[in-house]
Length: 332
Image 1 (cartoon, one colour):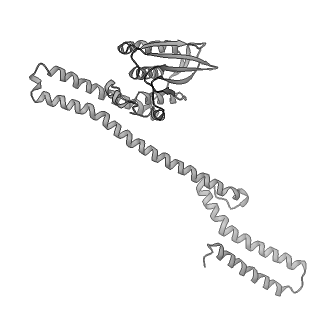
Image 2 (cartoon, one colour):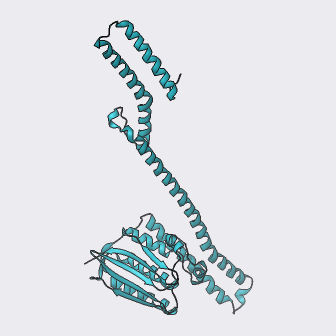
């Protein structure tokens, strides 16, 4: 008979105790102290043996497997009262891991779909232009150069997508090294605004740099932070309003510097803020197709700042504007 249920164990122990008590009562006829001592020792050994073999050892194995404990048979080394609590915590942690895994699977499927969609559009465009040229358009001076230029633009778009994907891949797999040093971040911001001045002028958007900090210097990777400014400014211009304004502002935070890139553009819906830094996620898909871009700019910003042990934050109100902010340590 396997002692694997409370009923079987209770019956077995009851029979053994009665048998022992009967034997002892025959062996010892008087009610001396020795009789009680012998009974106590026998009962103690019996109960201890079954508790240890039937309960403690099995619990210990489970406990060891869950928490990778080293084998031990000493009850004092394991707090049995906490086993249930710790096992429940372990189960909850595993459930969270499983949910996160399922969520990641969903993101991966969506990412593959987005990559396919982003690449499919320029590929189909190129195919259409080339097919038209092969069907006789090459001899037509009115369309041959125009279609070749359009095909070239589609090729450039594909190259930009692949290059941005390579950047993110390197950032995610840590196959890059950051060159941390003190640099003039205000000067860097001015260089970024100058680089995008023509693009901003097309939308009649003013780019400004405002330094409210006690220093012009911050610590970080200058080239990577320049890419952060370029991506944030470019994103601000794309989703800006005609005649709008984008400001890069530097503020004091004790030993740190708060950097904000704010605009008075079209803003972002609240339900889109949590997904804003996902690869290929677009707030306004129709407008995004018109103005171009790879949809990877903010994802790159996120990874660069994570490499600086910082996070990118955003606050936005629809039709009022958006502010992206992050923190860097002050330099000298």
